[in-house]
Length: 82
Image (cartoon, rainbow, N blue to C red):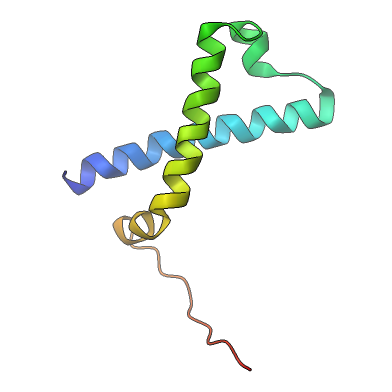
């Protein structure tokens, strides 16, 4: 696939991760599940959102090096000293 398509997939995955992170923050701080509040508790739509957030997390974990290459992100290399 073209790099632009992969970059679009990266952006969608990132957006899903932000949604998941904000939702967990709301659950932790206020005991309020925004996804369930909008889509209903454990409805098919809310479950789809939860599954997509999980898939996005797995995608980012597995593809992190490729994502860095695609977006030309260079982390400073620090050698490990014994």
